[in-house]
Figure 1 (cartoon, rainbow, N blue to C red):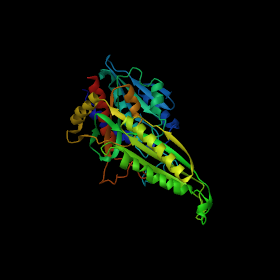
Figure 2: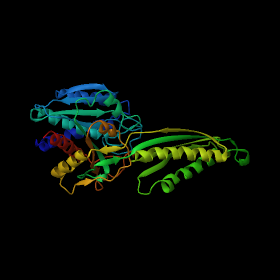
Figure 3: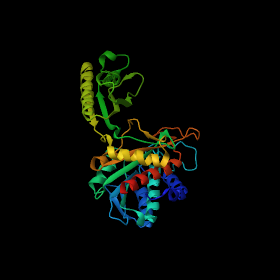
Figure 4: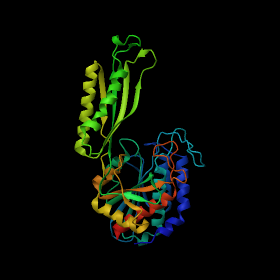
Length: 389
């Protein structure tokens, strides 16, 4: 296998520069226009075949090696989140209310680093590399499925991706065979009651009271209706109702998420939520509307490619640093790629307690230990080259 580590280390500072530029100039899902141009311009400068506008704002780069071996795709996501950056650093987001709070700026920069290094040594490649720069991972429907429908995986034999992950310490890498990340579904419930005077509740149907009962009742699904050894989450993320202290609210709204790994349980929980909403509202005479959206499928790693992860990770970082991942209740539309091609999704530790890099993903002060980008680049390229060997 090609010894590429020194080449990656040589461009590490350039990767950091790209990441910080992107961190200062984030773009929301389905609006990654400048980011896509940034990526495409760099790929073309290294004589990599580029296709823009793939499935939306996606960018696909093709690097042809010298041999007639397999074609391996590597994926990075490009979009940011609607969160105000509250970090005090030189590369704080310059766009009000938008920031890279999940590490996609670093994912993009990591894959650019791989592309640059590989382009200089294409004659040594025993196959081809496809670089998938995906738009809109953070919002349903995401960009993965639309890119696939637009031919992003044509000719591809295997696909790999990484997520820099601050809950894991920098220096360690994680993955596992089979289910890895949950299917993330979402729902919104609108409660229609009957408004009135706060001192005369008997003349009203209190939508806040009904919604409050729903919050409690919905929590019984996981605690009392799901097998305790089956991973499942039902969370209410928002509750809106009322305008004044002395007015019974006529309408209230709840929104939440469901996370599961089991496809049968996924649909069962959906039905239970709908039944509980109907029964609770009928009990108090309230009307309701429920909008339930099934999100991305579960991320399920191919067993053979997961074995490759442990082989490559151990060779690069050592057995102690290459660990089996716990189940992650977050969702990822990388799952769509794995529905079409064998592959593996992996986590690369990006947290550093000593450096104060401790904030979770989607937090206003989120940051990464940038050394994790070098680890991610080594892991991704190592997986691709081992597949080609």
